[in-house]
Image 1 (cartoon, rainbow, N blue to C red):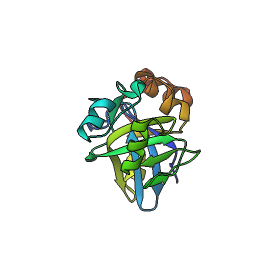
Image 2 (cartoon, one colour; image 1 turned 90 degrees about the horizontal axis):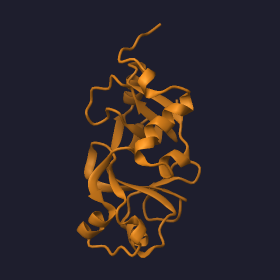
Image 3 (cartoon, rainbow, N blue to C red; image 1 turned 45 degrees about the vertical axis):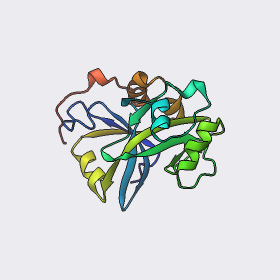
Length: 183
């Protein structure tokens, strides 16, 4: 099973407060585990505020009020930039379809100068699963999965992303049960 470039949709019964009602984009999934970022949980920090904290110039006014997101509970003091197109950055994990996840400062410097990627989400932290952990959570009906679409990640307002991912499955969040069963 390879869920790279898939969405994880938290089931209504998800008790973990880090992931309740979240939409997570899986950037890497292999025999060693999985890594993703939550794309629908903005925090109170804006891109302008982040750049100020990092002592970086931000020339682009359109990005100033864009929110920074809670990417997951792992390394919440570290920034992750989910972006398209892929580009040439110091430390990038190529995902699929021209999407990358970059952790190097050079991408933020380029964003500040107005030469960064066309589409991006900045998160603090990421979601990580050890080998077999995500598969176990899927067996426990903690998540629904569906292949990701770039437009949902980058083009939709944050409050529409979860519902749009659910529509890819042909169901609404309201129709899901809190309980789970196994046949």
